[in-house]
Amino acid sequence: MSAALAYEWTRIRTIRSTWWLTALTLALGVGLAFLVSWGMSVDLGNGNTPGPQERPLIAPMIVGQFAGQGAPLFIAYVIAMVGVFAWGHEYRHGMIRATLTALSSRTSAWAAKYVVVALWAAGTALLTMLLSAAVGWLWLRDDGISFATGDVAQVLVATAAYTVLFTWVAAALASLIRQQAAALVLMFLWPLALENVITLVLNVVPGLDALASLSRFLPYNAGARMLSVGDRSGGALFGDPLSPWGGLLVFGAFAAVLLGASLVLFRERDA
Amino acid sequence: MAVIEARGLGKQYSGKPAVADLSFDVAPGSVTGFLGPNGAGKSTTMRLMLGLDRGAGTTTFDGEPFTALERPMRRVGALLEARPFHPTRTARNHLRMLAAANGIPLRRVDQVLEQLGLAAVARKKPKTFSLGMGQRLGLAAALLGDPDTLILDEPANGLDPQGIQWMRTLLKGLAADGRSVFVSSHLLSEMALLADQLVVIGRGRLITSGPVADFVKGSRRNTVLVRTPQADELAARLAGDGVTVEPTEPGALTVTGMDVAAVGDVAFDHGIRLHELTARAATLEEAFLEATGDAQEFEASAR
Image (tube, rainbow over all chains, first blue to last red):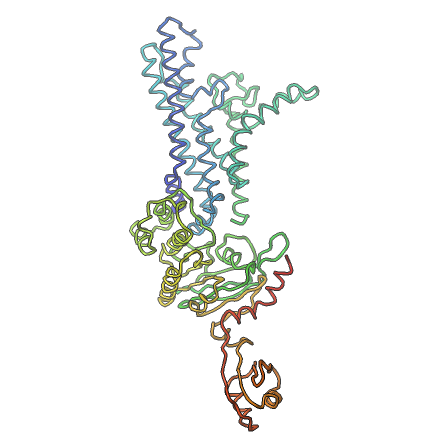
């Protein structure tokens, strides 16, 4: 296993796209945090004070890349491409032959990919969030916005976990269909279009509206609930909407199924 | 020492057998050539040997299958057809990555880059490489772990004549050190210079295996040319089991199935005057075409 980890660790660092995507994540995340914090500090300076209920949500929102209110976590989409390339390059360039003649255990080769990709995804997400927090604190510290709150800590952990799962799913899709371009398309279409269309259909087609509330179990819909701050689910794990833990369980199960299929097929198929 | 034993290898693609019940050995200290017409299953066989393709049979390296080897590149070096590297990862980084997985020191990476004449392009991206340079990077990867077994699929592809000669010297040297070298090629003249042993397949099945010399010696293309003013009489005297006599031109016969001495003795016994008696040895190419003739025909008609 250590051999496979050494291989993957070298692999991920010796390909340009990893660094581009990591830099892009940091630039987008920290850049947006900078602009929004700046805007808010101007706003607050003009005396537009937010209500006591909104005030504690500002720091988690900036740190969590504005995804808590239902917007897609865009940094996850960028980072997940590192996951897609982890498998995509193997098949696009015939690297899989080099990989499997350098590592005789397919299970180790498989596991090392997901471990290293997860570390990279979590590291990049956490770095982006911590830098965003730093930027936000610099702009807003004088306005009495605290970044050392339980909600911020929750956002750090939940966003990092979500990014890892999101990246794993994207990587597993690439490993299952062994087609980099198709995996990239699917990775974007599924959460951004497919699930919304299904939700819409369930809501508007007569007779299906009884099922509409089930759309909260669609994997990416559920996953997004991991990022919510301030529990509005009324305590029920699988209430409507799902609690953050419920979202984690649904999205985590989805990732587990895809990873399992990825392992089984990787072991069975011709390389 | 590294004995390769392939036993009962088999692989089907959508119901059609690509390789069937193929068994052979590769002994240390020799270069074993792997021959077969295009589509005979050479690459599939090599992929099966390394566990890249899933199929029937087993291949062991000193008793162990490839997938059970720890640090496999130190035991078996492989070069498979097509260029298995990322176009924008530099040659040195590519080898560093393979080395990292096999506990091979960085200095060995620079050593093989030097050995393969790639030192100048070590930090260049392989997408700029010519076919021959790509092939040398593949060879560098195969040699990286200083393995005692090499499995090379068409290693001469894209190499210039100097490169081919260099590779021949290299592989012969590696075999002479006691390594097992298993190499496929469609260049028969090259194989004749390189290989000591042969494994010949057609339509995914073993046609023959053994020393190159025996293979060529067994060919029906080993003929004796004999010139005599008494051609008809000699032809009648030579006729027998396993012997064919063809008149090639007036006063000349081509005899197959007898050696020079035997033809000379028959002529002497019957008082037939000879003007010329010449042995024509078959080339490896002739022996190969003869041995794989059926397989080749099948290939052509199947399309």
